[in-house]
Amino acid sequence: MTRPTIVIIGAGLGGAIAAFDIRHVVGDRARVVMVSKGDIFHFTPSNPWVAVRWRTREAIEVRLPDVMRRKGVEFINVAATRIRPHENGIDLADGRALHYDYLVIATGPELAFDEIPGLGPEGHTVSICHVDHAVEAAAAFDTFMEAPGPIVVGAVQGASCFGPAYEFVMILDTELRRRKLRDRAPMTFVTSEPYIGHLGLDGVGDTKGLLESEMRQRHIKWITNARVTSVDAGMMHVEEVAQDGSVKASHDLPFAYSMMLPAFRGVEAIRGVEGLTNPRGFVLVDKHQRNPTWPDIFALGVCIAIPPTGPTPVPVGVPKTGFMIESMVTAISLNLRDIIDGKPPTAEASWNAICLADFGDEGVAFIAQPQIPPRNINWASRGRWVHAAKAAFERYFLHKVRTGQAEPLYEKLALNLLGANKLREPTARHSSQETAP
Image (cartoon, rainbow, N blue to C red; front, top):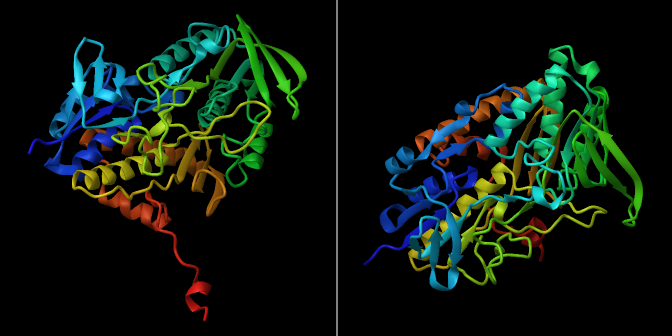
């Protein structure tokens, strides 16, 4: 029989690990193909360090074609321009069309800088969303050092990735203190979150108290429930929104350097495909990571649709964190194996989260099981150990990508000790029910 073709679109944090894991789990029962608009993997969590020159881009890069070839994955270094699910087809930028039997969408997001006038690298603020942006942010930071002034950092309305904003404002504070320039750079954190430490998750443990305390100690002011209306050269215009949606206050914030995370939307190749995505272009998935309309399409990572944890005065999205994404990978791999074997899919991702937020000299770690509340575990802690742990994790993850491993045995054992499972366990009967007459 002809082997089915599994195509993975996207070679980022989720896509690269998905290629390794699917190849390992499915084995020779399927042809595995990766489609990517670039042939280099970048470890995105290190971008804040690149932006202050604590890392070079080369240090966080891995060339993928050789790795994929060693693992038995075909690599196509051409962008996908459109998905045609009714024909099981993918259009590529070089004019080719690719057929799939099963498709795994791991594209990540499109960055919606254009939704706010003056926002982003093409406007007046820098970004750390992509390594190219981080390199540009580092050059802008060099220029800033020649004439320090006010700094504005944060995340705009509709953003769903708040951790890097907190990391970057703290890392900037650490770097400026090391250079004895902190007193010349007043800092303001601007966020659409209803409170500091919300993180798009309604907080984890006491992230509100931990992060507010950290900002007070570092003399960082903040504005929450913030809606950025526009950005001019050296000036950000912000509306602070009340609980009823009215404008509570307006702020004109001068800056000499600013990094604001944008809202995300689905990439053009999938946006607007009927039955596949929501109005923002994020892929709709069921509990098995499959699209309900097109069940031969799976999706994982930032490109999937997750409803917010609750209403907020300013739109706030839900982050898709690293461990949460890896849990989606595990579920998809097992479900693909079962489907190829003629069985129904049963694996469900746990969506548990383990996060390390580095502040340059210390940091905050949290565990949320599951990531979306209510939770079985809801823990956060601050300390210098987090900074060391984040650096160690960077080295470890890059090693995984360079060697083409999804989950080495020692990682699985460590996660089991933490009780951090990648799959949702079957609902257990309560002990009282077992003993009831």
